[in-house]
Structure formats: structure tokens, C-alpha cells
Length: 457
Image (cartoon, rainbow, N blue to C red; front, side):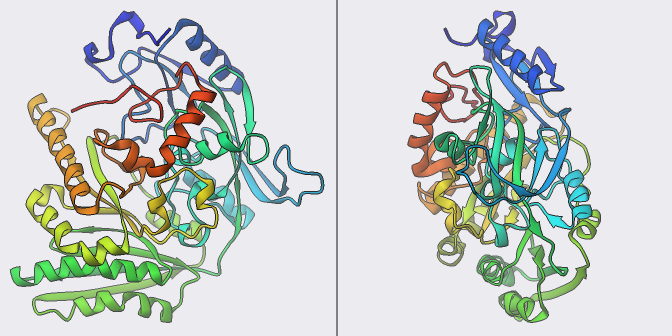
């Protein structure tokens, strides 16, 4: 049997996006009971941690929800050995985080341990939920890869209601799927164990601002900024930025030097020599990562009506497609000017062992064109903006090609070719794993592997 919607109403006839019933899980046992109940009653089941979800996967009209936010706890160790490892395996420094832990709390605890955990740049995002299954970009990704590259082990409740331990030894296919396969399609995570890393000597930060003060300088500044961004990543910097009447960005380099900053920012500085443009750069250092976090990770605890259409910007796109990308920016107008929700060249020797899109091998930024609306906006206005978002995705495909990927956690919830854009050549393998682990499709969500839940504008 397929899933039933509570009160026997189909998904498209419910006039709100919220679940009808929710379980506040306080233990893995609670989650097991809820999953078994949903299985027995053939319910539409959704999973929510903190609810930071651009694709609406943590809610569902008429659904039965499991809320994992109250599962708290951190365990640090110097010699973690995964379950099922061969006898004599050497342990590594690690931390095990319960599902409800959030990144700023983890960073504060890590500072007491004098270690680094590769995590997100928003303080309230959950450290052991959708951020992980979507890949998890980080200010540390230039050194240590994505979040999924640092996962050693995952404990979760599977579609049969069993609490299982998943790692490279116990179930390599399941482990592959969990590290990048997206959303809550794979089960309800109860805890994740991450590798930890030593603290650097300092955190170097640089703020770069380039303004185009004339119409004639605007296009060369904007187009040149894309290539200059690639040069910064080649010098080992990560960061966050946006385009408007110029470029504004914040760049981060653990242990960075003045020479590295000078080398990395040279292309940006050259843009400041264009007639009708100006360049400014301010750099400073923080003694420790937690000092940086206390200064910059101050996102408010509010919900916004924001949607993105994004792609991973590669060097080829930055240098050879810059004109087309800026055409797109100027045509869609100021309301949709793009942001870079992550900038960096991800360092990873494990890319083929995780299921994130292959474009992460050479991607240098997550570039997003967005749209938003007020809470009281008319339905017609919201519908029109969603349709425009689909047009943005089609335009991205026309520019970058059908094999260009994106960060599935910060993507268009109405992405037309989502299987290819989110996972590329990995999708077929993921689908086989999904059918083997969850043959009745208990765990479904918008544009998730093997799901027939596909929201439309």
C-alpha cells in the first residue's frame, strides 16, 4: 500500500504546509516507535530537525512528523574506532553528536577541546540532519572537504524501525547514500560521528568591496569578479559574497598569511583599476575559530520566504560563461541579484565515496539567484515568483549545460531536472540503494531520491 494522508486528504488539497501531527522525539526509542506507527498506518512521514530547509522537505501537508531537535549530547574522543572495523584498527580524534545539536553550540564545545569540527556557517543549523545528508559545505572545506567527507559513522532508525549503525564497514552502500543522498530519504538520524581536526594558529579574514560607479564599468567589474573569485579559491580561501552594483565578499583562511592574501586578491585589485570603479580591502585576524564565530555567526532565529535557483560555479563557467551569467543577472533585475552562499575549492580525497554531485570536484562557489515575498503577499504574486524561479533554473541549464550540478541543500524546490542537477551520474546508484533499503518508500520528501513527492509552483 502507498502512504495515506491524515484525514484522507490528498497532498494538493491541504491549504497549509504543516504536519497534522508531530512526535517530539527525546530518544531513539521514541523514533523507532513513531517509524513503526507510520509504517503500520501507511502515513505520509516527514522528519524535521531545526527546519532549515530550502526545499520544504522538513514539512509536508497533512503529514505525520518526527521532530528530532530535542536529542542533545556530545561525546569527544581521541581514539574513535568505527563499529565493524578490522581488529587493530587505529582510532582517530572524533566527536559524536546527537541529532538535535546545532553548529554554534558544537563550535563552543569544540573550542574547549581545542579542536575543529567541519560544520556550517549558520549558528542554528542542525549538525546531524539535512545539512549532512545534502553534503554540508563549510568554511573549512578548502582544508578538510565537505561535511560528508568527515563523517565516520551514522546511527539512524531505518524504514523497518530498526536502530542501525552505518559506516564503511557495516554497510558501505548505505553509508555512501547517507553522505550526500539528500533530505530524510534514508531514515531518521539519531547521531553522527565526525572526525575532528587540530586548531590553526589563527583565522585570517578579508573583506573585499568593489564598486562600479559608472554604467560602462558595471559589466567588466561583474564579469571579472567571477574569475577573481576563482583566483581567491586557488589561494586557499573560502567565503561568502554577493553581486549588485559591484562585488562584496568576506573571505576566510585558517592560518592565512599576508603573502597568500596578496596573491589571492590580485585579480580583485586589478578590477579596481578599471575606469569608473573602486576597490577596498580590509583584513584582520582572529586568534581562534570561536572568536570568528562569535563575531560573524549571528543569524537571527526567523523564517523567511526565500527560494533559490543555484549552480556550482566552475572555473570554466567563471572564465568562459561570465558574460552569459551576468546577462542573466541584469535581465532578471535587482530583486534577484545573486549571492554566493559558499565560496571555496573543496579539498577531498574521498569524493568518489560520497554521493554529492560530481561537480563538487571542481566547483568554486554555490551561486544563487533568489526570490522572496512578504508574509501577506497575494497568492498570485507568490505563484508568479515561483514560476520565475523555474525560468531561472532553465536559464542556468542553458548557460552551464545539463550536467552542471548544485548544492542540493540550497537549490530550487521546483528544479525541473532535479535528479541530474542534484546528483548527476550518482542518481542511478542512489535509486538502487533506496529501493533496497526502503522498498515501500516510507521516507519521502520533495525531490528526494526515489520519491514521488515533487512540488510544483
